Length: 392
Ligand SMILES: CCCCCCCCCCCCCC(=O)CSCCNC(=O)CCNC(=O)[C@H](O)C(C)(C)COP(=O)(O)OP(=O)(O)OC[C@H]1O[C@@H](n2cnc3c(N)ncnc32)[C@H](O)[C@@H]1OP(=O)(O)O
Ligand SMILES: CN(C)Cc1n[nH]c2ccc(-c3ccc(F)cc3OCCn3ccnc3)cc12
Image 1: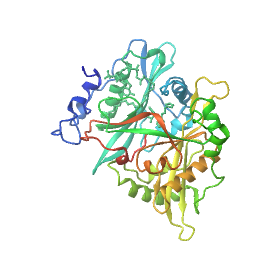
Image 2: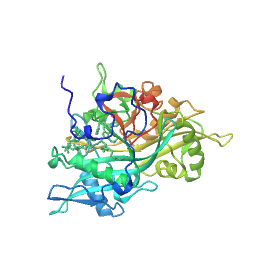
Image 3: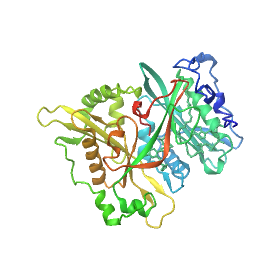
């Protein structure tokens, strides 16, 4: 059968489907760096009606414009029942980590109306692939307004962020997508744990099981009012060093994982209301920090329901279980999410998540999340359980 054409992606230094079985190709960078003097100096051309617009997310008005573009035009589920509704505070958190570059917050505006019609972002990250720690860009929030779809704008946005990243002497990137592109390093499934089953059924996220009543379903997903692990508490600034040690040691077990330092841990894991929550277990006897769990807050707009506008979802983030069984630790995370009025708790089958999903009554989601590296080959790819990496 004629293989699907990827007119843009076939031109890019990524694993090509036709090379999938060619084991002679070495792991690592696919193309060497370009001399910085030879990196294109000027932005790629846009259609005449549009202009590049670097979004300074310090500016509340610009942050609001980005929020609105995404709230109306970003990722929907396959049945178009829900759309991610990243909050302004979340976007600031996601896009302004240590050493972020404003130049990598790339908008496209209509010249006339000055309306934001498209966006793509990069943030700097140190990613380890096997023993190789690589400076990369994490690419996210690629969005083209619904009215401007299928005009080949996305490749222009991708080339432009690539150009700006190259200008910083960075030649690799990491990204995820719900769509299959050349070529995933792994493909994850996502799972959902009901916290508010009545609402989930009302909005069409879940269906009442066969031979199940609503009251039986509510009982099935009931959770205690407080965490069960002695010494379980919120993470605080004073815990950054201990959590960094714990997390770095844990992530070393995976084939691909971020190389977090203490500044990264402070940014990505210190709790922020309705953005990111993190908890740890401090041994009541020794006061040692022995375990850690975290989840981030990403609501979805409910696109057509009489009773509800929003689904409040928690997404499993980084979890380290050393002394406490992972299942018990994650059960306490569920308990905290229920306490904070989340409707559902989501998790990918990455890291060691497989070990608790069924036992904690997660159900399989209906799609997949593919992980990608740009200009970096990992022959044969990896298993989700070898991935120590969560992108927002
Ligand atoms: C060294 C640094 C390197 C940095 C760069 C690294 C790479 C970063 C890559 C970006 C990572 C982003 C990660 C991320 O943000 C997380 S994935 C979420 C992406 N955003 C959404 O799904 C929001 C709703 N959809 C849209 O806004 C549009 O449909 C988008 C903009 C998605 C495509 O706009 P469109 O109007 O529907 O389509 P055309 O303009 O006509 O373009 C069609 C071409 O775009 C390819 N396409 C479609 N979806 C893609 C996707 N999600 N990644 C990459 N490529 C994607 C497609 O295969 C085709 O190319 P092909 O003909 O070769 O197949
Ligand atoms: C990761 N980050 C890049 C956003 C992103 N892009 N594309 C995606 C495709 C799936 C998931 C995903 C990841 C974990 C999960 F538990 C559920 C998910 O999507 C459910 C379907 N859905 C889409 C919108 N509302 C509901 C995220 C993403």
